Length: 230
Ligand code: GRF
Image 1 (tube, rainbow, N blue to C red):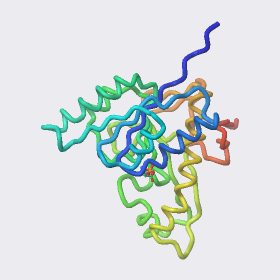
Image 2: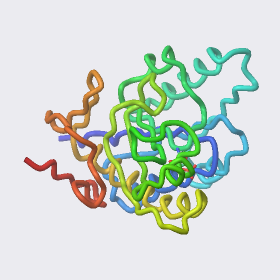
Image 3: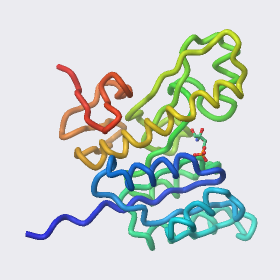
């Protein structure tokens, strides 16, 4: 019997690519099983994450908005690149472009984004400062399915960190980042081990409706094993 081919992950970035690196490490260390980084796409030609991908011999594409006549042309080039890589899962990891509903409807439902807040709190930018301004005691990151609503799609998994009295937006972001990476690896491992689907804004894992996001360290282990409780 032939083994199923590995799932093809395509990661979209705009900058540093530390979450991309977490995925790469997770695959290399075999914590994320049966997956391959099929391609990395950036809208920024000088994104440091692109250099990392090239050093790992992962195919890259740069699609710059400024080089295109319209947002529509940019998105159609993006869609073409994703299709060329035959993506099974598309992961937006620090991809700083708002994608149009028309574009998103052209993608499969297998598109995830990592966002640095405990969604539904703080969609959009400046999430760390907004958590501080609200005097939140908990902050965190979420991985959610991408829908036309900005940072508004169903949340699959989250990680929480405590906010400290002395925190600044920078210190909070710095402390959260390694947990984002753990969340990314565990969530990718979960996707490879279980049938995860998003249908009509609801998430199903192995056919069971997910009532609330999985929390890293509570119902999602660092190796992607999940216990959904009763
Ligand atoms: C991360 O904080 C992620 O949550 C947000 O953008 C940042 C990207 O960082 N969407 P990196 O490029 O993965 O290092």
